Length: 324
Image (cartoon, rainbow, N blue to C red):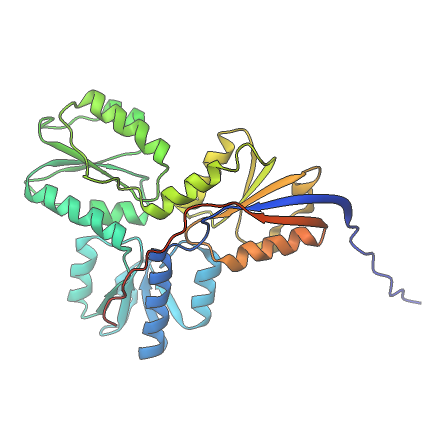
């Protein structure tokens, strides 16, 4: 005789306090980029091609794939005369030229704050400055920004530095005409230390009139700082390839607080919250709120919870869509 007995998940008698960071999740640049892809699909139908992941979130990318979006790393994978969307991270001048050569119809979903950095780099190049780019090698935003300076440029050089050691090893031909820009999704604290090192080594170096760190990155970092003294575990909802999500994770770990990066709730493990009394949850700028709510539901399966919102900056910025 086959038994129909199924063991029930035992719920903890303890109450866990969950605090939600504010702001968290989608920023205006990410919302704009996703909306551009969806509007393009509505107008022209599937398939629509996107150069690189439009935003760095596995859940968002999979949803768009289901709707008929094809993500490519090379424009040569796209049939001639097709629509191609440039991701929120921006692209190099070489990619734009290649798109034109292949007769592709391009739509630019670059975050306006990344575009601002591109404009700074182009202005500095016109003024024949040597440029220092603070950022992570291989990140698409960094490649797009460095790619504003064409490889055969005689007037301008651009160098990438990732840390203070890179600054110490950096050699430039003209230290009297030097400027820096930074990847928008870096930690404010990290860039501050590198900028200080650059100024110590090159006293005449100049920087942008306003901080390159985007408002959303800064706001989410300030929000997570409010969690440091309140929680014994902080979840950062976001994907492994999301720079801003990883910066939030690093900030928590640097304070010797348990921190977990998660974007697939099927991977949630009950042992993570064992003996935890107070949990904080935040989300990177490319992570949708549905994932935050999914995480809360996973915790609720195990224990009773009390949920509160931590007050923070209210974001009201909306970026206009390009012509589609």
